Image (cartoon, rainbow, N blue to C red; front, side, top):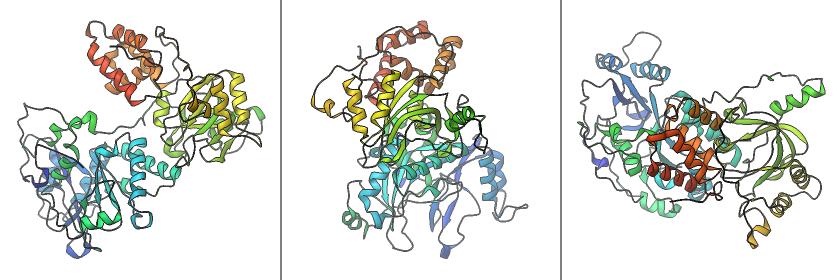
Length: 543
């Protein structure tokens, strides 16, 4: 993995000491095989304590309040408790879940290693981490489980039950849309995960670190006969995954804590805690949640925009060309829990649409919802009545073009009928001067053409915002940009930068006033363009 770390996490000194002034104590539950004691330990241990002998798996991290920790410490046996819980560990876990005091290290695995082979699993893992979690697979730590899986330790946490549920929903959506076979059961509460170095009870082979390019023979050769060191503590497991990534750590020269107790002071929570946009107050749940199809034709159109089968620009994208959809926006984004784990939907009228797998997912002059990925919804800046062509695919980072009504109609016609094809629609758009991307049109691959650019102009004040980014921009303009979080300022930057470097620069300079920092702004703008090059290829970087 080409990892390096100044602190030897694999052989770190474990400690049972916890500072008396700590209000929260990170703790885990260990699991054992059936023949070597209880399946789950009746007590939680701090992540700094030695891993108990015979332990094979570990739970998520429970941040025990001081009172909870001392309540457990006062018990001789973890089973000797009153109430409905079988052990003090379960009682404390439930309390922490209720209070959102649980941190979940993100893991990925699939049990079809022998059926599919390592190359397929690595391809699934890379697509999921990079396109759904925005985490490079190269930053993850990969292990052969010792039996029938490759494990991925992602250098990210999710915190709290809503985030955990959303992570599970993302994994299920990924499997549904790509045909991948991940173990989505990992993302249920209290789930245990195998520790590095532990031998698998069935095969006798240990869980060892591997490289993503290794084939099945190389994995077996490196695993067989290997006796890896089992980490001394769960803190050492975390340190190996996280602190080997320099950008995930912070410089804390003034810390009074020595390893291993300094772990959470060393990690940058803004970078290591993965947050999803699942509490957007501006994503409404539609009032049209009736079961029966309306008898009135006018009402039926609106009912279909919210309740018909959604069109996904990303479904079955693996190995297939990109999807193309031409539509008229009929309202603002909303969410329903029964659709793709609450993914954002937009009511629309489809002039025509073909999914990645062609005629398996089509729309022709239909009212229906459009499904948007989290990334695409952040870029969504269209109002009711706008005509939009969306070109999607495996990356879940679609190209979106606002077009004239007659262009939307013609693209729809190119996508429907007996001789319809996505390529015909892309060729038509290219001939009209729209940038469909270098992989879109045949003509675009063989000739140069001038890309359509949005004119550089001042950023107009937001009066009636429709999109989340627009509402954040309005809040900054009215209440001050300091009222936004770092992530919210990033979303506004993505929005205003689309109009050009100078307008975006001037907008931020106006909002910050004397506190404006040119170097920081230049770095953030450059990061946005580097992250989304296709979206900002019309923006000229200025020094």
